[in-house]
Amino acid sequence: MKSRLVAGAAALVAAILGVVLVISYANGADARAQAGMKPTDVLVVTKPIPQGTSAANLSDSVQLKSLPASAVAPTALHSLDGMSGKVVSTAMQPGEQLLSDHLADPSTLAAPGSVPVPAGLQEVSFTVTADRAVGGKVQAGDTVGLFLSFGGGAIPSGGPESTALVYHSVLVTSVQGVTQPTDNSKPAAGTITLTVAVNDVQATKIVFTAQWGTIWLSKEQANLPQTTPNPIDRSKVYQ
Image (cartoon, rainbow, N blue to C red):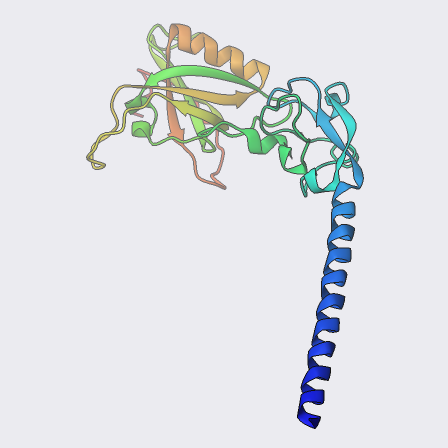
């Protein structure tokens, strides 16, 4: 009899505990549901935004909208504060939330095989055969020396032919078109288009030489002494 009373009491306690746990879970579920439905203001795209758009120009293309907290992405932005100097890393369409992941430093958007142009410089391109570009081994980010050469002469005396190392430490920002052989012991073949970062005077001389003469490149190492040898013509080549 006593054992039956103990068993009955234990069953009653277990039943009560079960009811308490169910009620507690239900209340917790309601609280979680209410928290998930709590409106949260986030920036949502209202107009198409091209890749590379500056954060400073986004205000007309985004708008604060209230969304259920459960629908808000973890990195969603609530304002553009702190985004100065960044740009949109990928094109965005209306309806998308603006995420911090979508904004990046402009330097990270450089196309594969290219490097950013330093401030104050401009880019100019020219095409040479691979043998005039260190066998095609020049890559974006390398610094090169530029030799300008003229078959008809480019100095007042001597000649007629002349060649000069005119520029040191020219930054190569992009390389396109070189054909690399399957056998790495052989030089590259074909032509290569190089884009370099230079100032306006340098760009003018490079364009002139690309039009009327020929350009050769040397691949320069860091800390290379930057001497300026005199131009070479036929009378000096054996000296």
